[in-house]
Amino acid sequence: MAVFVALGAFLMTLFGGWTARRVTDRRHLVLGLAGGLMLGVVGLELLPEAMEMAGEDFLGVHQALLLFVGGFLFAHVVERLLAVRRAAHGAADGAADGAGPHRHGGAAGRPARTPEVGLTAAAAMVLHSLMDGIALGAAFQVGGGVGATVALAVITHDFADGFNTYTLTSLYGNDRRRAFAMLLADAVAPVVGAASTLLFTLPEELLGSYLGFFGGALLYLAAAEILPEAHHEHPALSTLLCTVGGVAFIWLVVALAG
Image 1: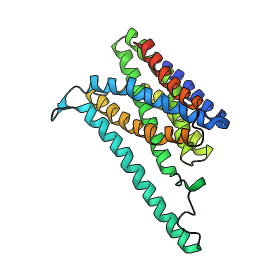
Image 2: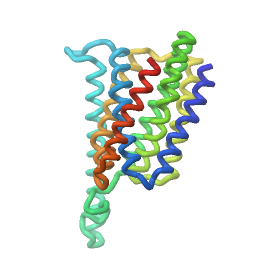
Image 3: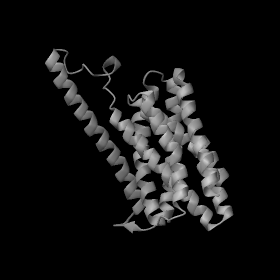
Image 4: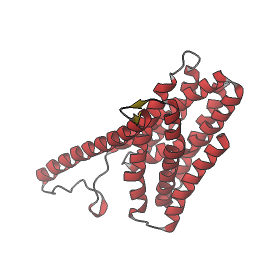
């Protein structure tokens, strides 16, 4: 049953990615919505689940919150290291051909995007979807009622996962082929995760720790990359409304699942 339900998550993920691709003429709205969806997933779903599953304190601080901060810092360090590396390569190439250190920069003096960051972020989304599938399978092992509740949450928010996976991959300069490949991997992941529960179960504390860490990394991408990019060229009210709408959508999903 869990694997069958995971097929619904597969289709919903692809639909989310297809939506992100089709509205490229309203890129600022896409990014605003993606930022809101990511913020909603982190604050209303991932972090509460992480704190419930990883229930122990470490040196006076909840383990899930420590990992949440750690995930945020990890994403920040990785993004900065890759940006410094790309800037150094750009400076070397510019010195070689006389173009100057900003040869590989973006438009209007903005720094060049690092495709590796987008692929890393999308890979984290794929891992998250794999964990969704495992959680789905484990829920059906507990009982049909619990499984149905988790299934509603997983299938509905996988639209956001597909939307965000395609957006994150393409935002950092990856072509459509790579973006679609990561989207397809994200769609397959919950099916694989659900099928794996026929063989083993994941300890609850380990799953909670992962959710805390992943939530911190996702929040960094939303707050430091996606939302600033959404308002860079189009600081419009419609973009802000898309962000609020993304958060409200996740809130509705959580309320229905509860």
